[in-house]
Image 1 (cartoon, rainbow, N blue to C red):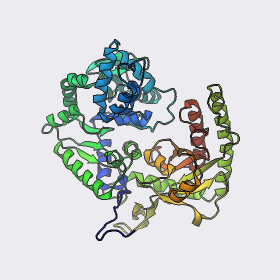
Image 2 (image 1 turned 180 degrees about the vertical axis):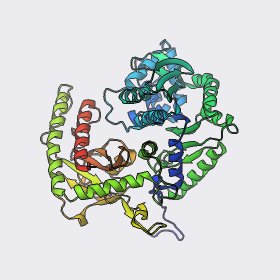
Image 3 (image 1 turned 30 degrees about the horizontal axis):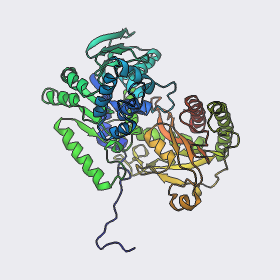
Image 4 (image 1 turned 90 degrees about the vertical axis):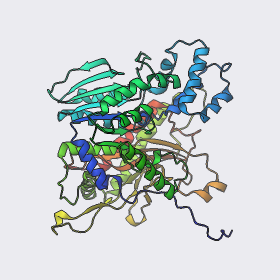
Length: 561
């Protein structure tokens, strides 16, 4: 078919020209946050989503489908489906109205939320809440006053703070307030520095117990708006600010930023990945750039510096780089290699290529051995499916493959620095791809035939998706159809239908004991979701698989100091 005259192919956005953590502006703000003495970390819904996979819209949809909470005679099933067209807070108003009409007491909705928000397993946790907790405590250990303010009412960030606080040798005072009222206090072992967690929209624990006013529907939000704005305004007045997991549309947050526009001259930074911009299916390059420019101008009006990484996983890595800077200090102002992240990747690669990369036989043996363990885990947990009356997957005969993908030679040395010696060579993150390095099925001896795929927002490769999300990922395709799948198999899926991909981090020598993402271990199956043993609803099974996949990844990508 001939294209019309003047037709232009639409160029889709793939990845920013300059890696996020290599940009001078980003490095500067990493150093600024690391040096903060008084700071508020605003943790929005994205922090919870990273840990649970549950969005606010998804939560409301599940609650509307709960027949014990909202009987079908009050809200018909077809009406529940139509609620997806409403904004989440609007659908929540429908939910609360229906629950009230059914005669449920005030605490019924928070109690119903518990089973949706709290899971017995956290296998798909991306670690963002843990990084927020670690950053708060690392800053406080250096004498900083830190407030973590959150609009989330589950206690996941609080649990992360308590866990990290309990393991720390130098414990600052840690307190919890709910809508500005004291709730708990843990006295520290150090004299300076403190961390306070502020629940802005109330608190719901794992038993369904509530504290403060729980913001569910529009009426709740309108009733709380003035109080929350006042709390945030006071917090923003004389502190630096780091905003993560926020859509930057929360009215009290914006009001507080506006109220303190001329009284606070400290740095205010917000992180929003490209994949969170709401552009959805087709990330047209021009449209992405225009959206970023508009958002930059909008947030500049609030005197907020918007930082836009490409991927969700880079938000947690940004925080990790701040922590690295706290531990080992910033690079020198005249250092040609100021990005600690680039230095860390380079340090890991040089060590790994000397110690492991040539050992493809070892990689194959490790993966083949691990696959036997994984089969046992799958067989143990899927056996119970027989009792449930569902079709039982056969883990013993299911065709499985285990793959190791690696950031192959991610950093290259470019032109010499100002002094012309080797120590001043410029490090550049140039090879931004993921390489298929080893397999349980066979030994890949020839590096020239190794499959290398770009790391981009458009990637269809499950291993790339997991790396960019920064968290474990289960992915299913429909049953294989030779007549259709072969013609559109752009990502090399072939007959492989089910996947569990786990990003692997490694500690580079001399980089503060903190990690960088270096690869992915992926379990693949020829069976589609209906008949595969890889099932994300089997929480205990996924936890067991995750532990083994991380263990083999650590053995393959670990480097000695």
